[in-house]
Amino acid sequence: MDLILYNGTIYTQDKTKKAEAIAIKGECIHNLGSNEEILKLKTNKTALVDLKGSLAIPGFNDSHIHLSGTGLYLENINLSKTKSIKEIKEVVGEKAKTKKTGEIVFGRGWNQDNLAEKRLLNKTDLDEIATDKGIILYRVCGHIAVVNSYVLKQINPNLKIAGGNIDYEKGIFYENALELLSGLMPEVTVETIKDNLRRGISHANKLGLTSVQSDDFGDYKKVLSAYQELKQAGELTLRVYEQSLLPDINSLKAFIHDGYKTGVGDDYFKIGPLKLLLDGSLGAHTAALSIPYNDKPETKGILTYTDDVLNEIITYAAKHGMQIAIHGIGDRAIKQALDQIAKLDYQGARHSIIHLQITDEEIIARLKALHTLALVQPIFLDYDHKIVEKRVGTKLASTSYRLKTLLDKGIKIGLGTDSPVETLDPIKNLYLATSGKDLDGNPIYNPNEVISLEEAVFNYTYGSSYASFTEEYKGLLKPGYLADITVLDKDIFNIDKNDLLHTKVRYTIVGGQIVYQK
Ligand SMILES: [Zn+2]
Image 1 (spheres, helix red, strand yellow):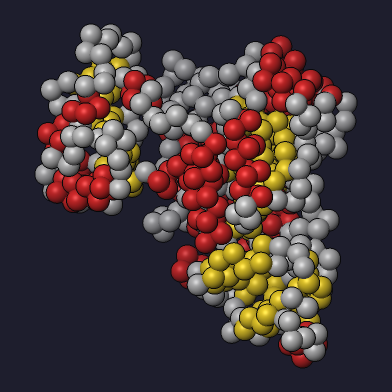
Image 2 (tube, helix red, strand yellow; image 1 turned 90 degrees about the vertical axis):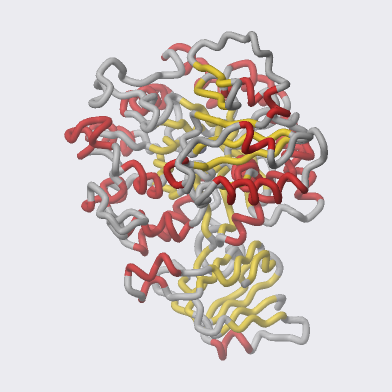
């Protein structure tokens, strides 16, 4: 035996089976049982881990994130907790010291309302930090950024920008003018993608994740090379199912022509579904609704594809062995997706709608009839519960974010976070799914849609595995299953609900290897 975990509470999700210890051989679980039974399997080559009463559960599997985006987000300085311009100068100054002349420091999250000085940052503030390298700091909203002179010098002062402007005096960029700054981003290379992935992987392991379903493509060849190189170097300590964003028929055809389709790869990196984005977001009034926005009646949001174009892409993808995962937030986008999925011959391909926020009874019934999965993010409610009624009105809001209803109707779901849009932390996500409260303790608007912790964990592990065709060997703690295990410092099924948020990860184990421990 290679590894034995003992003295724990083992939550197997294997209905009748209770255990205190797990024996692991190679990548897989060999057996589970009492301490006595399992410790008998020990040899002089066995590594032993005393769980000291901790809870072992199947490893978390996030059904939708952006792993390289998460790594990039971690690299940028987070200023959301800063309390003064003086403090911002210190924090950014520390980071600037690590950069070479000519490189750019990115930061985000500042908010003048929280700063002692109660004013916007300006160019003079940032020039006091550095003038030989660039500094770009985005306000918390993402609609304003302040830059130093080094950056400003690289911008043509005679440019006219539709839908945006630049205050050259203060070094502040507004709205569409921000696009000029994205041109200053460093070139995306296989090396920079690898760096972002490395940060994302270690962050994920630390939070108890053993698998993710991740949308990373820009240039897919570079992304695939980055993953292959990390895997060969033994750095891919997280299993990845790539939600392959190929937004038009030509990029899809090139991808298929290169020999890719759903399932190509191995249990560390595998091509997942074709990912398509059909609409925008609720916050920005760009999610496609069937009715005008309640708080912006001149718009019903934006559909990205015509029915014909979408049909061409989806039909081609399905014919060439691609599972399909569609980003749909508004009910109009979700119905457009279901109309197209309904036209495909084979309904057992585990196609999914990612997000599925604004829904009605018809959508729920059609999901069920079409065997379409829902990859949902309970953590979205932390913010969305404050705006959903405002945006879509009370009637449509009352049939939206229907976690419990989806389960009751027998629709398969996988839980996720959409990190870095929201925190990657599974514990916070479980809290939003099960507590009926947001992270500040305020009640969320639709408490009837709360699910049990058992249901939430099941759909964060086995449920997500189902979405990636791996439920026969991943997502339960059972002999023959992959030894992907998360160990928590508390038995979350037997604590006060409010203590859930104080739960910490003690070990993360992927394929029998301890990839994180505290
Ligand atoms: Zn996303």
